Length: 116
Length: 114
Image 1 (cartoon, rainbow over the protein chains, first blue to last red):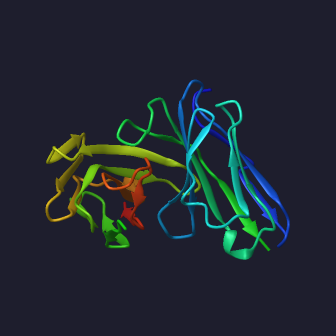
Image 2 (cartoon, chains in turn orange, brown; image 1 turned 180 degrees about the horizontal axis):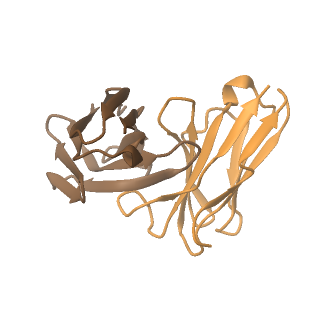
């Protein structure tokens, strides 16, 4: 596609519910990143994929967060047993280069998750 | 651990003013620094990328400088326009982390009044 597509755009979840957020990167992009952006703050790194391999998951805040990219294209970020502090915008970015940073990312518009 | 700070957090100026946004980082061992723009409800758009060996980059009315040794970068916007209203984020990629992520500042929310 022409850009990075994320769905849903908005998600309201009841505390304790599981959610799945989807990212469709630009076709052929090798690198894919997930970031979490709390209201009024800058994005914070969650995890990084190179093709289907998850090379860095150091930013995932707890074991309730899980990400996958099984075929090296679409990625899903899953959050189990959501809590109020999980409320944030989740941004996905992709890059045609390995590593991405320094060669230009394309960011999606994000999924705004609200846990009530 | 790298920390990135942006000052001011918010800025309101009349149209036509030249303005400077500031970014500081604690670890000078970086590969590069990027400035992004974020419009409400939208993703991030890359504005300028400065490699660690460079001192500045220019694009149109935007000029970004980098002083790596002092851990500072500035984004200069000339002749500001209402369409420049957005949040501006700076981010660095560290040499000292094995991963490839960016560390972002908290952003500066800019409003340019007509």
